[in-house]
View 1 (spheres, rainbow, N blue to C red):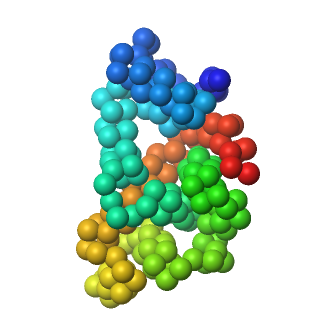
View 2: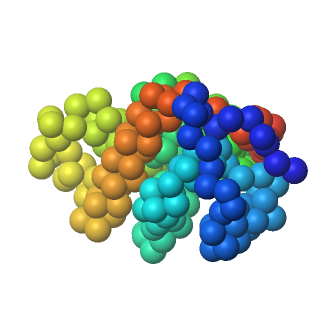
Length: 190
């Protein structure tokens, strides 16, 4: 099943035909998800930009890290909630529901992560991501130390900062271009 809705408000048609490597990547998305995420379709007007975006996303969200996939998705949702990014809230809210097996957690993170039943580690991580989103220039050593006190290493802090930074960037691009979430996300893991 594919979604043929324009992925953004911009008239940037996908390269046609897609290069074989890109088509293979999109085919894997359809096989695993049932659709090609609109964020990928949006970037497919320029294969170099698409490749740069997917390389960074795949490294941050799927690459080697002491942060779990769920924790990375939780950061994505909290940052996107602060930024009010509809696309990322829908897409990554679905991922949190799926990875956690808890639809309520996904909804709590979307609305206000502070009401969610989080452990000390998760709360510190999300507090840091939230501060990075709203007041990054005010982050000081005590903020990093709170993460260390919660059990994070300096490498983990790097990963938290990079995931939060990536979603701050992608939220702004998605909002500025009126990126539309795929309809399929709404029903996932409910």
